[in-house]
Image (cartoon, rainbow, N blue to C red; front, side):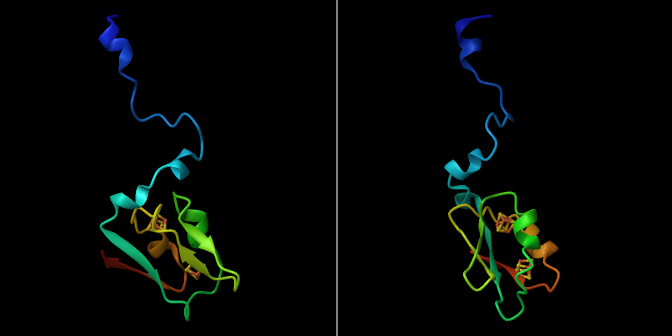
Length: 90
Ligand code: SF4
Ligand code: SF4
């Protein structure tokens, strides 16, 4: 194997769990989630499904988003039982 080949790291590998917290994945987003706090029950289903560290629990038990890490995938909106989360254009 040449020195050039050995310098290329294999892709698609997460070598350390939770490492996305180190990156601002919010720059990927084209839509952002917005929560209607009147509908939010604080069940945290969205927190369980979110693939990023992007959903934070507020002191009142409801949620807010960390837009530096939310990549806009929309999973939270799909999974929220009372449909309290809408995806809106940036
Ligand atoms: S899933 Fe919906 S209702 Fe439950 S905490 Fe998240 S936003 Fe609130
Ligand atoms: S849109 Fe995706 S990344 Fe952003 S808070 Fe919802 S589930 Fe998490």
